[in-house]
Length: 465
Image (cartoon, rainbow, N blue to C red; front, side, top):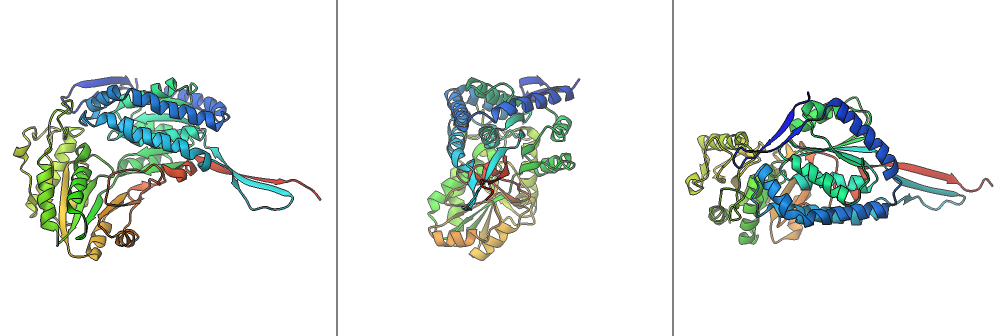
């Protein structure tokens, strides 16, 4: 018996869904079916593959309210926001990746050479195994699923145990859009089953989004195979507020960037460096706006801050905050302002800390929760040094009125994406990638297709004279 998956809602501890975990035989059958289906799918004209994926997006958007409610029940994000993940980001990424496909997948011609036809063709890899997380379960999964399918691959999706209904929603939406049977499949797997599937000779690429620890496990599972790995592993993303910024705009953006989804975002803002000239005013505005949030039942449309995914995750953040305060930091938001906050539960008030430094875990270790540390800096040089003082490098952001300064500073910050006057957003026309412990590989943009295809060179001699 392979076991049972139980999705426990952080809202009230109820069981949202139960599913049997796939056995080794189930997994082997899925790979075999995927390989059979992919042999035919790769021959389907690109325009038809694009049309099916575009139709998938429209089916999902039409069902956004039901899917959003299911998502809230599974992982706790307030229901006022969850339909937007489907109708907003997921649909946008699907449409843009479909639109980019003809140019991204086109043959690459060599220079003219009399008597020869020469070009490079981008061929599908075969079977792509997508391992997706719970925090943005539609957004993170679609980054790999749609371009993989458009490129002519088959896909097997293993979603987090916290969001199994999302995997099934992908399956049902693609089936309604007309995707042939076997081209996309869902497997509910435990850790051992996931690692075994990574090692299966019928799997050609693994796209993983999760923790650094999980990324190491994926790498170990693939160590005896020459396959590609896409690893998006989170971050400790910094922001720098320069003295010349629009301060109100910076406050509004950064409170949202720190606390949306209860801070459970790989590219959410987790540390802020503020120039001394505007530090006190920024902190005052940040705290005032934070106090307007409402922590509570995420099924209530008035709620703006839901529970964290589980009590242990909330207690981890509580531990970071307590250590920082014991080491001299000051917490500026009284948890009593948020009556739903309760130790030992997933309901955690947002925390704003000042007097922090990089000796504290809250400034160096990924928190993945509603806590932010704010440090005063005296110069661009100090801000750059502190932003780079991290094991991570997924995104970083600056608030300034000087685009030239933003470009100059951004060139020196070790990160995969550099923002000016915004944060916590993936533009599907730009490469989504990280450096250091934030992972390797690339999704989205035209470049994302290069990781889901292999180049095949054609060298044709058209005359023998």
